[in-house]
Length: 262
Image 1: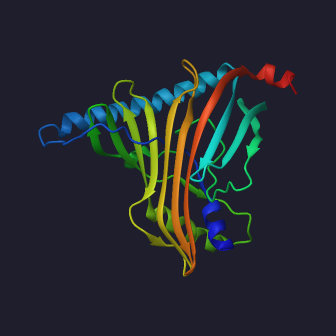
Image 2: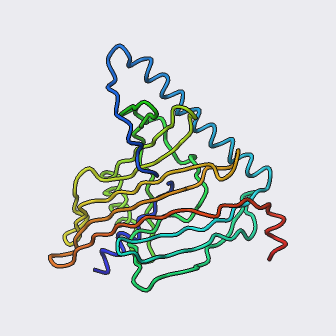
């Protein structure tokens, strides 16, 4: 059980995702393929450029962000925390999370990276593929961005095997809004069950994140997040975890104010 929980806690996703918009999917005919793909990839580039421009403005204006994130499990248990800016590093505001509420029965196996601001710099778009289109969105498959961290004593060789297994089994989809040509959602998931080790089986792994601008012309932040993990450790221990996380009370402050408040 300890190994299973460590495996799930070790998965840190560097990025962020929303439920895909329920618009009917459009078939891409051979006559439309060239035009559709050109428009879609132009929008993808525009979305990445937009994200970079927002981050640049955020840094140049010495802005900082504060917000509250509330997570709830399938039993209604709550974990709530507030992000408090405390300073800056390389021109980027830094801070820490303070727990506001943590119900005793709340438990999460997966730790999502605590960065609240979305950054696409780790995306390898050279391998992006257009996989579907609706009236309002384009959906791309992109290379996985998964990093594995551990507090346990583990060799580089063992870590490499874990990273390779995860990279081979997880798929990532990026959703672009047609009207705004901005990144709206990210989905990371498994298409089929897989066995991490002799004792650990993962039947379902799915994380969905949605993004929205923090304020007009502000950076994109993670707005909503859902994660669903189903698995088994050995013959007796089953894991079925569904957690939703929502962001609220988002506010902009400048870093000078943040430093004065310390």
